[in-house]
Amino acid sequence: MISNNHRINGWTACGIRRAVLPLVMCGLGLWVAGCGSFNPAFVNLLDPTGSLATIDRAPGHLVIGVVNNAEVDERLLAFLESAEGGNLVLTDAEKRLLRPRMRFRLRVTFTDGSFQTIEFIDGSRNLVDQNFDTQAFPDLNQNDLNSVVVLCDVASVELEPGTNIEVFIPVELTAFELVETTTPGGAISTSFEPRERIPPQFRALEIDETDADGNVLLQQNIGVRDVPSPTLDPICGSFIAVVVNGVLSVPFLDGVSNAPSYDRDDETTMASIGGRYEFLASVQ
Image (cartoon, rainbow, N blue to C red; front, side, top):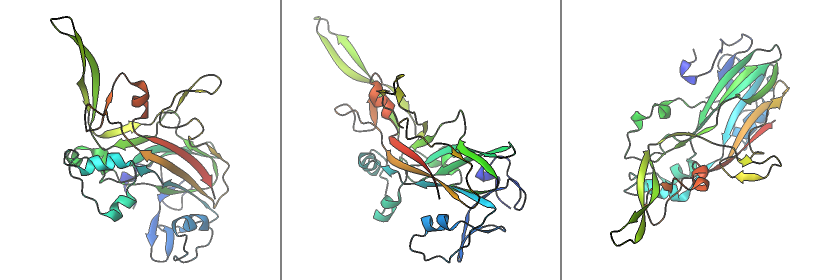
C-alpha cells in the first residue's frame, strides 16, 4: 500500500485507470510497485553511466519528475555554519548534495476531462538554522515526492492554477526600518531599528513584475519566461521533467547585522528574498 503522506489527490490502486504512483528503486532497475517498467529516457536521466539494467519502454504510463539542480548561496551556507547561525555541521559530500527545499503542485488533466493535483516536494531537510528545533516545522517532516507515474491518456500537465512555487527559507530574517531621531540641539541622526523577525518557513516565489510591453519593472524570483510551461498531449511512455535551476539566497543588511536581514523600505531587496530560479518543462 502507498502511504497517504505522499499527498496525492485522488490516486487509486495500481492497474486502475488514472492511478498515480511514486517511483521506487530496486536492484535491477526502476519499477512501479506491481506495475511494470519505465521509459528508458527517465532511466538515462538517473543513470547516465548505464549501470542499471536496460528497461523496456512502458507504453501505458507517463512519468513526471522533478530534477532539482538549484544550489545554496555560499554566504547563506557560511552563516549557517557559524555560531550565530547554529553551527550547522556538514561534510564536503553533504555540501555538494545540498539542494533548496521546494514544493509546488502540478495538475494532470486527462483526455476524458478528469484531473489530479499532485504536490511535489524535494530538497534538503537538514539545511536549517540549528538554533531552531526542526521538529517545530512540520513542513520539513513531509515525505519527499519528486517523481510519479500516471496512466494514459494525458491531455496536459501544468502548474496548478492559483498556486505558488515555494522555497524553504532556512534562517530567521530580521526586517529593519531606518528611523530619524532629532536631538535636543536640533540635530538629526538616523539608525536602523529591528521591526520584525520572520522565522524559517516556506516562502512563495514571485514572478517578475512587468509593464504592458514586457519590460521588467521589478525583478523578483522567477523571470516571466522561466516559469514551467504547460505540456500538452504528451505521448504515452514519455518522461516529463520539471528541471529547476537557480540559487537559494537571502539578503544581509551590511553594517547593521551579520545575520540575514533587510531594510523593509527596500523593495528591490525584499523582492529577491529566496533567490532566483528558472523552471524548464522537458519531455523525453
